[in-house]
Image (tube, rainbow, N blue to C red):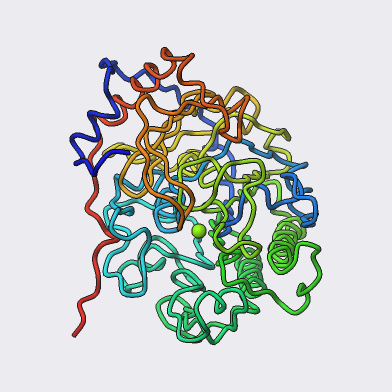
Length: 474
Ligand code: MG
């Protein structure tokens, strides 16, 4: 254990022993979309669902027939990462293609945005929706936003034509219930969260019992309405984040209890959306991605999900916090496969923009890479490394199969920072559960990872902290 260190000392600590290198050239893959009809895009994003929570990722008692079929028809990624292990920064990473440290959408003062937050996604960031709107796309956001609830930060001011959803987490604005029990035996009136249509609150508290169903209905309606022009739908479920709520039709149906009921209702909704695409003749021209924002919230026991064989969960930089199920589907276009290459939500940004013929911003660092080679079976994923931030600090880095932990902390609500020098080192291909530290036998691997880190940190410009800002009380 070391005492608190400042940022300069921290970077020095991470980069010790590194040498400077020039960036290698990065070939990009052009899918040749110019002559074809522009594809549609749907991102379905869950909240706090773990790596082990789907049947097709090994869960023994949660039934997910629609996602299983989607995975069999498309690609199931097994080394797919989010940009952060909690909601707000992870969502910022997905929608901007950038590590949240660059946009300021992460913080060591507050982990996420709250109802008293004054900040949000900076105007200067280019969201997927903004980039696609410039290409003539219809855009809709349905579900959890969590990138700022003040008017200037809402989806309708970030490239989306419309918004229907709860603008932050479903456990916020708590007004009732007793302590932890409020989360384990939740009532919808305990959580005074607003449901918004565009920029207006239309229901408060939002009836969360029907929220998965209503989000799905909105999504289906948007798909039907938009079939004559290219569209982008971002459907971000508030669940299975605690407190758990589910429609009557799915209650007490799963062997996994309420958590399983919730996942099964989400799965049913995915089935509704994919069958709508098929019915409307859109399936062959629509790229659909299903994943989640971060790992399971473990302190809620059975009400939290499971990271399967991965270590820890939400809020930390062990694999259970940041590796997620990811299913990609595009019948006739994507080569069905189980993909063991690395990918990230930031890559979804770059891949979608590239496929739409939109410009990936060049006036800033974009961390996302174009996954087209892996999607279309022409080559491997271009992603060879991953940087794991917790708040504004870098805790770990992966290069190829190897991951070095410079700092570790257990999942949300557990433990303290522990500094490691030499870093803990795991071979994630041999040891996905991060059990066996091999640092002593592999000093050359650590040198290589430090080189990558030096490159990453050399040009890093920190965005202004958006999460620490609070609305001033009158
Ligand atoms: Mg989350």
